[in-house]
Image (cartoon, rainbow, N blue to C red; front, side, top):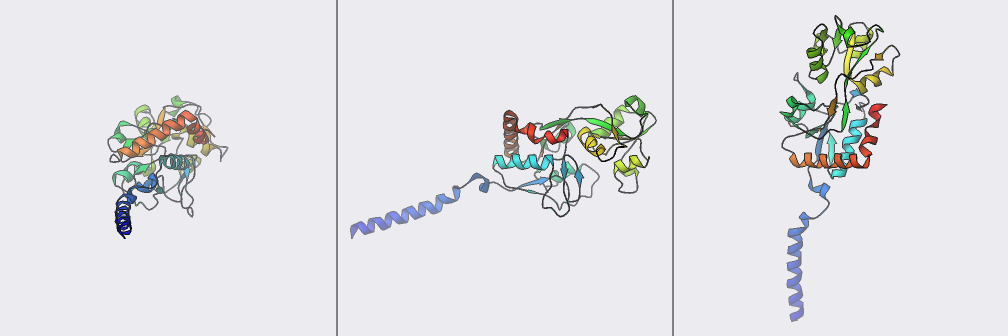
Length: 261
């Protein structure tokens, strides 16, 4: 009889111990918050960086694949933000984080001091550079940009570079046109003479039309980084750790090799 009483007491203590301690066990990815990633909206593309088909649940391309790999290795759950309503005239890639609609943003974002005031950045995962695309074969170098209409997206390093380095050119952006015409179409319509942008993007765009020529010059060296909410220091450390490891194994180079195609 005594033995039964002792066993029942032990069982009660064991059940109490398990009830208290079990919530602290389990896989790490279940204990972490779901990370909200911003790339773009469904229907947008900036190849080879990303493309998000309207009916797809998530985007494809170099950067979506890369961030999925990084967060998976780090043990995080994640989702892509697609319903962010943006009514500002700033840099959506940064504002989506400061507005607390996303924890991280990856979209060919050049690391610079102005952006660092609002978000933290990972170590670079790729280096690109500003280049120029034309259809006029008489435009062969920066010296030929004088008295020409040069297009660069506002809030980009290409726009800032143009303002600083092309004093004799007319610098325009999206706000100077009344329609949502793609910049490449403005070039074909002779509304602009030169389109500035990331070299990888321009080379990809030129493959779809033989009229386009990308000048064989990078005017800058642009370190691309993942923008991270300043309150997510642990997340930033994990991302940097994974990028460093992917570099060592050579997998980062493989994952970003599509930028070069």
